[in-house]
Length: 514
Image (cartoon, rainbow, N blue to C red; front, side):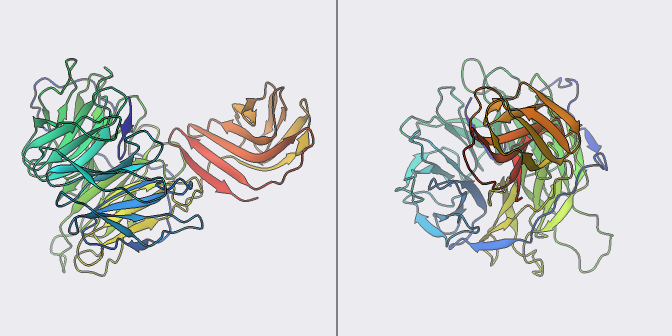
């Protein structure tokens, strides 16, 4: 099933849901993942959005040059801004694109709606969904609008709800409605079908919670301390919402398989709340009680001047420290902080690590980092942080480049020989090679290889191998693949450019130069 979402990755309990409305269960998690590697990031770099009120951001390669670009919606300008990425690093000056209809643009996404191989931009506005088809050159076409029936539309995800291989739009609105707009192969949307959910639905995440092949969704509420789960029905559409109390109102909700048990879990931030909440998923589409992970440090009563009100906003999930486990990034908007909670093999989250989200000298918390995404901006194989700073005077997008040195990843430093025919025995030297599970030569697996020790292994070039990179996979955390370009087959000549390490299943890569 096709899914384009901010994140769609998920702690497990036994099924316990007895009624549509369940009692609030609150658990406090502290120090449960103390061995996780601490990530590091460069200081924030800011880029002007060229407009006002850019609260949301999306990343993707709009011009097909292999470098990620950024797009942000401008709430106060009825426009979006495109910042094209540079191969040498950084971003070009923002280029605004006006919308012909639809006020207060909010959450947005990039996807190939019309299946022409070019990314398009989709934006939720006050009462419509706006589509701007991409040209493949980094520019956008004229905006087209489709009624969403969601009053003051806010949250949005793209997902193949109708199971026809085409992305649909799921949009939340402040009027207590969530709308589903069916997509077409031409990149347009059909008539919306709406569902009554909560009081003021804001965030939404879509996935298959109960493994029946149908789309399910979870929705957060800006006025009520609940999230609502709507399971997909066999006859199409969604069942009535099931209420899960979470003890906070929130603008953001995401789903991710945090403990890799195959069940999507729910993650929530919160207004006037200092913790990240996780509801562990069950195989039947129900969820356990909220587990709270402290994020914002506690301030002693009577502290002067008093700190800003806690306001946790955007959530992103990905492996930022290279240990193979999903980590969680969450924004503290009022305090201009970004926190990373490292994941673990059990799915529990470690102590929150703070990073400056902007100019914290402002009495209102500086840049107000609202939305957050993870993306490999500089193509070094590590997930970087992107934030939208849209409030007060700032109106920027911020990037924090990942500088984490992966402690348990393998490396390759030399091959000997670097060329030869099929049947050649090649000696690999490096680090952390113990337990290697496979060796491939330009995609062809070696049938014979031997791990000598942690720094050395030997492998025989297999039949069918051709000139190209060689890779070694180890089971570390849960698996890493290290690549060394290039081994030359049959005495061709080439040069060695470097080493890269790819961690799965969250596709984080670290590249090093020999």
